Length: 200
Image (cartoon, rainbow, N blue to C red; front, top):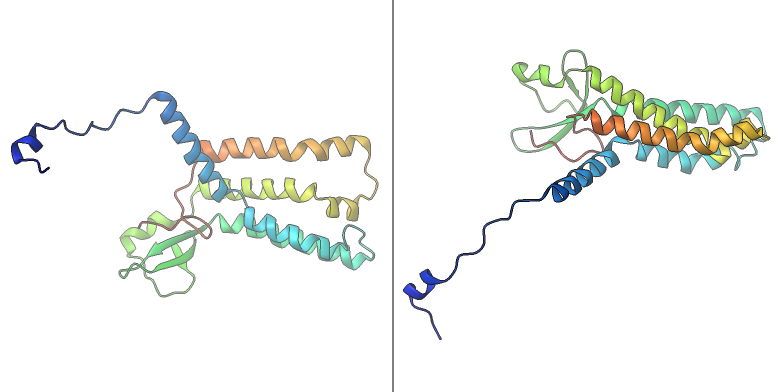
């Protein structure tokens, strides 16, 4: 059976989008913040560290002083990585190709050097206080995670005291919660390495 044009016009229209309730808005905001936190926390660096730490420490035994030196170098390089990656950003060229760079005091230093940023837009990419703040928070999160890694603890403190064991068990949770709240309260606009691609 086919409907005539008049019958179609008399059919009820689809309901308009319903307004979201306060609860729905809060849940949506929570999910957005959680997704954003996954980008801000130094997950890639922590994963790299957790893969290499058992190798460098001989699973926490640190047979020689050389193992301790290698572990310290690994900690240092991973810490620098956490801090510096907060200064990375991305831009799209005229063809839509994404290029990555590092924020500097004068603008964005594009790593591959192919994309050029117009001078009038260069100030958008300069280092800001929030970048240093996010870099510091990422470094703190990494130090908290790496500092309680069983391989690192066994390498440098083979027999920690009861107080030290208590600190090592509670410190990462406290640091994670505080830093997550600070990341959420003071978000960044950068779309660096590991972030969703920039729309600009």
